Every structure is written in structure tokens, then in C-alpha cells.
Length: 282
Image (spheres, rainbow, N blue to C red):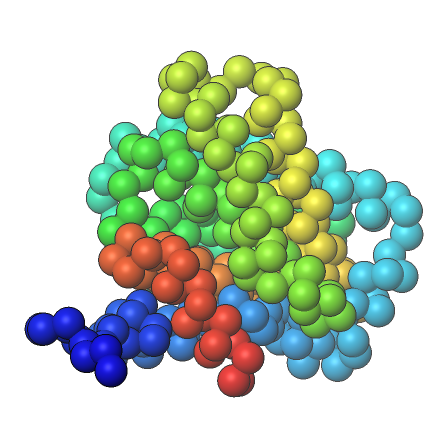
């Protein structure tokens, strides 16, 4: 009979699972809130409650001229937001006032509601830049260094992450799915900015980044515009629509930068696994 060698001890069958890394209670709760914000975009539901009709159906009924105007305004707004992200924010380490952001966005929404589609080319860029400043403050609060081009671009990325609808396929539109689709363009754009130090007009890598963001941001811009042009909305309702617009992207930003903060602490694989578990159990 062969006896075990002296001092030999049986090894656990799954050594990696013997000491799993667990999130601190506060971090787990923060991740749970992030899942709620990122997996269940609420803008369409909020706007539908305002106008009393499914906002997505109203958006589909907009004339082609309105669709073209929304597309042009969306592109212009994101171009201005990108320049702000890479130039203004990194030179201004001070946090802004969330109340001020809400007041300014509400005021611009009142103008949009009063004068309709004609003001969109002016109102949307203004609203988008104000929202970007709010997103940047949230990013800073979660430990982001906005002098890093990748972190600054992550602020712009929020506009795509918040551009999903309730009718999207969950497997293709979930937070990590969208983030994965944008990962290459974000990385390439950040590398380009880090190497050049400036953003050249029409640089292919930056055009590709903005195009991918715009294709998703345009979805919620259409919803917002449809709500503001609805006959019963008017100036007061237009202000409320913009307020909901801002709150929507603030919620998405908090979720996004919470996930990024936890990834820096625990590692991407662990956070993605826990995120998926929480999302599946909702």
C-alpha cells in the first residue's frame, strides 16, 4: 500500500474560487444603482408621461425635413462638445454647480419649446455643452482625471450610452455591449489626441468617433425634439423636457463613472461579472 508523502495536503479543487474577491457593501450598492441606471434608460418613459402618447411613435412621424435638421444639429452639438471636452474641461479643475446646469438647460429648453424646430441648431449645442459640463463634474466626483484624453472622451461617450430605447435588443444594447462597440473608436481617438495634442478638423479617427456617438445620441435627440414640438408642450413644457433630458444623462453618467471607478479598484473582469449577475437578477 502506498502511503501519502509526509506533509502532503490535499489542494482545493477550485483554488481560484476558494478566496473570491468580494465588493465592499457600499461599492456593491453603488454598482447596483449603476446597473439600474445603465440597463433601463428612462427618457422615453418620462417624455411619454409628459405628452400622454408614446414618444417613439411621435418621433417616427416627424417629417424628413425635421429628421435632417435633427441629424445636422446632433453632429454640430457633438463636435462642439468634443472640443469642450478636450480643451476647456482639462484647463478647469473646478467643479461646477449642478443646480446651475439644470437652470441653464431648462432655460434653453424653454426657448426650444416656444419657437420649435427652428431653434434646434442653436438650442441643442448649448444644451449639449451644458450637459457635458455636468457629466464632467460627475466624472471628477468618481475620481476621473480629465487631463487624460481617454477620460475626457469617456464623458462624450455618455451621450451614446444614454441613446438606447426600450425597444432595443437587450443583448445588443446593454451597457457593456454598447461600450464594447465604442471601445476601438474611443481608444484610437484618445491615442490620436495624446499624440497630436490637438483635434484637427476632419481627422478620420475623430470623425469615426463622432459618427458612432451621433448615431445613438440622435435617437434621444429625436425623442426630445418630438416632445418639444408636440402642440400641447409650449415653452413651459419645453423647459420640462430639457430638464428630463439633463437628468437622464446625469443618471447614465453616474452609472458609467461608478463602473469605471470600481474597475480601477477591483479589476474589469470582476466588475463585469458582478454587473452581469446584478443585471440578470433584476
